Image (cartoon, rainbow, N blue to C red; front, side, top):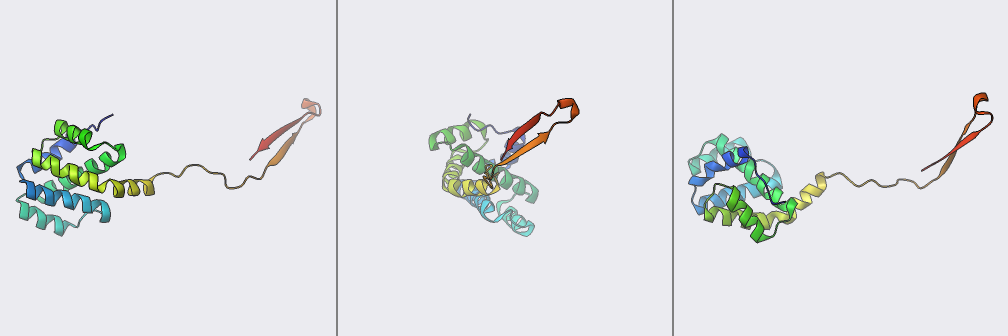
Length: 152
């Protein structure tokens, strides 16, 4: 299944339509850095928003949306062409912005997958292979029957 993005994500990314290619690359780089070190502080977002002539809240939402797109593309392991097609069909961004996002997404796939593995649930594993035989002794109503159970 190719990536499906909700309306809220598209609305958050709508703000980035006004940016030129270089400015979008800066925003995509900040979103990629967000995967490495967590969300930037409010002061850093305000500074970047002022530089890009955007609102701080809008930029923070757009960064979160871009981080989601990057991690989702890593999770689904889409090839470059399928990723490009999915982004072009679903996101309201320019061609240069899509190319920049594809580049950043492909570069961040190893790190995003590593982070996802760290947060994932471990597979169940045996701690001890000691066997035990439990025998339930019968009462008078069972007339001396024993019910063996094998447990691990």
